[in-house]
Length: 166
Image 1: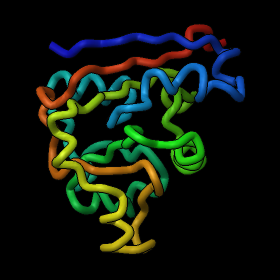
Image 2: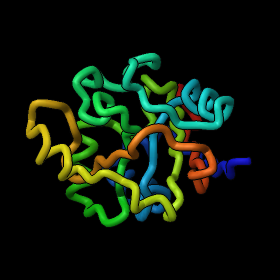
Image 3: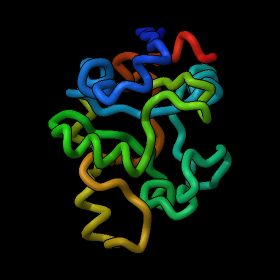
Image 4: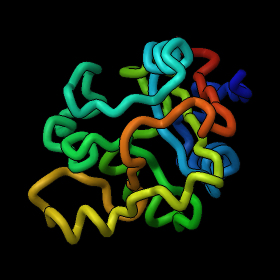
């Protein structure tokens, strides 16, 4: 059974410039995680695995997912905030919103990978060296897991939602 940590933001918190530093950092820094929405969370819990999307059987998370390095290789895309600096996280946010948004119905789930599996991760430098900028990848903080991730590899899930959506 997965441990689920729930964290509710007020809409005011969501709009503050300090959201990352005050609210998100404690839940995400120091971790490697996979972000998904409600439907993705339910599917992962039902199947017992975070599946790669090489065959495009799941909706794309972002407009450039069709040219994603990780998806193309059959990897599961992850964020690596183990040692990420504020600048790197802000740069990530400019390229890919990992915070709750209208598109996610203001709810996101972060599946945190157990530290025992960090040695299997493929770093962002691999994409840079292998394909340069011919495929999409997020500088600084993206990494990948080779193939699907069994739910047993997940330490916990953090659910972040906006409490007062209106």
